Length: 144
Picture (cartoon, rainbow, N blue to C red):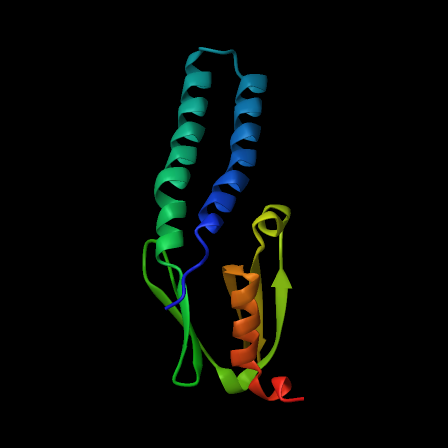
């Protein structure tokens, strides 16, 4: 089982800061500071932020893995329930690499694997892992 690079959790957490700043700005803009509505709204967005930062994103990271076994690409994911996606290698048509600015800093990207009848996103892979995944998915193209 291959797991995402550890920096992927950091990238997810850094991207979580933007909605946190927006929520803080909006609660300060629309509510009188230290009033009851301000305390309720601020408490709600802070609780949501802390839940995502300390529970949801680490659980998502630790339960995310993929492997190639028995002619299938298998992805394990899920936070509140386990989810297993399987894609036969013979039906894979192409892959696409996606990199965001923070991912390009750490040389980490996400791969979208498109097959006949489905698609699968594999986030948090280093460029070397992406190349080895492409070699495993398309062995005949390497011979040319």
